[in-house]
Image 1 (tube, rainbow, N blue to C red):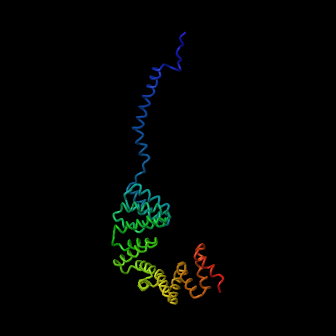
Image 2: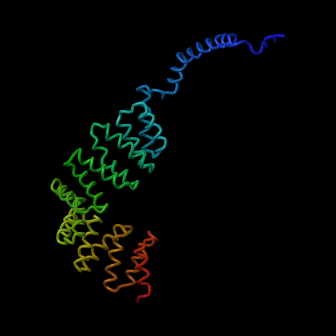
Image 3: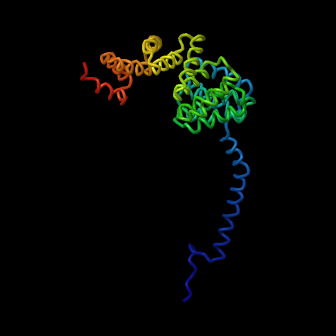
Length: 306
């Protein structure tokens, strides 16, 4: 006996007809949704564009918040303006400045890079672009940024100084010295360049040159603590200890937290067998830097001496 067809399981042709009957309207509906609603959904996801009036009001608000020290709120405005006008270097600069105040140095560097690429005068991102990398401990990237700054304006004495100083701190003293000299040919009275070269001369045991540069700086700025330190160190190397102490003690009065003065005075006190005075200076260093191994070892070595 031939089984009757199961109404729940129609023939292949019936199923195909059913699928077509359902599928075509569904495809039409999906097409309609794609044509009509997809652009709407895409536009809904785009950032709301600001009118010129809204932009001006937001910019004024951003500057006011920044001046009040409300950096997180100012950042929200700056990023919104940057999102709306991605090519406007003014908003990029503001965001970079805010990130600096927030201590978000990686973000700061990223925005200074954008500024350097887009601003009509990229050198106005200097030295901040290099300093943002330096504050992250990215020495190589910092030096590269300072080099790019100098390449944009080879006669800019500020750019020369910041590159030379970064090279000096990284141990590249020969190149740093060359740059300090180059800068002084452009700006002979630039105190930081004078002192940078003085420090290089001191390391190279060129004491007369180091002394001359330090004293020149002091004639212009008698309370310049870096100049006082270099002068004190030069006189100490020359074994003119009374003169050395004169400059170093003046430096301590002006900046007691500048611990290099205490190190230099402690060494002089040891030379003079004034161990109590040396210990006093090492204790001052350890107050700010309890883990300073040099001060700790010297303090321990002197502890038993009269």
